[in-house]
Length: 580
Image (cartoon, rainbow, N blue to C red):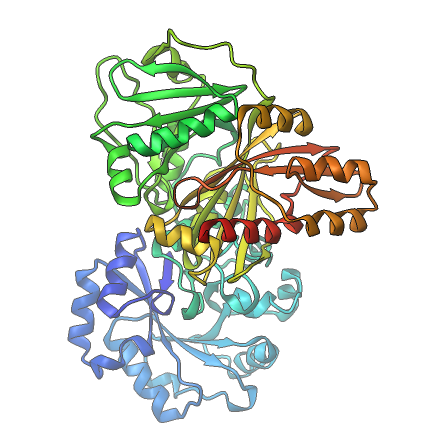
């Protein structure tokens, strides 16, 4: 049974149940704090639950101090709302209190201990030895002290009634978003023979969206079922996680003014205007394997995105092995498919809505999708012989979002695609802290940076506020020779972000660099980082519409990071420029 605790969802009781039902959950764990307003009016509660087409998996009685009378009342209430399990939270092994189990019929009572009370609670259950008294476990309680899931074998749990899943220290993250070994935890419980409810239960102050909670639960159970024969989960079959092999295109929604600004920037980076759409006001700019689509259409999705957010990256195309299977997996995990009218001679490219309403299209070579540029576009007649500056491909894309959306974005990517996450990095902004988390495909063909801030005055916060929501804030292009690219950029009139002189003195001392090398960096406003024998170079453009910018990077000797040490000086320079 796939379940979520009502305590994990924002809103009043009715709003919570509506969101839970819309996200494909069939079961809900009802928490006592959520129904205090009803003063035990069970018919009203049952009506709301039935109206949401949900069933109750358990009733969680959340008092910190229990009396036998309180628990008996809770047990009778649990029975009246058709709850098969009453959960009692145990935080003090000396105060374990249960009702007379013979008075409550078939209702099961599950004691949910904190880590400190775990052994004593299980011993107590063995001592009472009643068929309707058992244990409930919360994965964060079990694992957050760093212990291994294997120790569960030593606890000799004979009656396991209920499981709550949460990740991260204090259980504040959805499964797969923290560092707890939940897959091993689930495998061991499955080997015990547990085939009951799996319930998402996250601390209320960090409530994720119910769609992400469902995606998280289905994703981790599916992964366990693939590698653990003993696991028996009642979950739908979903296609395998998708391997993304590259970024096929980035599409901007613009009006005439924003198009002129973007065109000027693209020309300064030696992009060439290569193709024009056969029937739409859409232009393809290209350099190396980079495809930039500029959409000035007056109708359709791109125009709607522009009206809502201003000039913005409205669409991204990913290269995958099978586009239809990619959409199928994404939809199975709760993503919404995206369908728009297709004109005569146009391809119906499979797509889903990303988090925040953005669109992700999928291009494969199993069909004509990879020929979209030949089928839907004509070559321009005015292609000048522009000397490229050595930009090869898109190195990474940075998406900026609200702080409380970060779990949703991260989970969307790592559950749909074969991508690994790095640890969160705190970046100092003049107005606060920005959280940055990188995710990438195994071979590094697709790299994404997710950035968020609770402070709206940070550079990231202002971008989200100005755009009325999350979006792509910068795109980094890979160069094979940053100094050659920088020289050509200067000739083209590229406007790079000015870096303060003090940065270069500090960089020289940190890495023991010679004066000539530092002078080269300083002349071209190039930022530098080093990790062992590997090196990283960065050039930033000045800001375009409402905080968007480009970056040009070079990686040497397998550098795998993103220049985290340079982020604060970059943000400081961008903030000064933004306020000028």
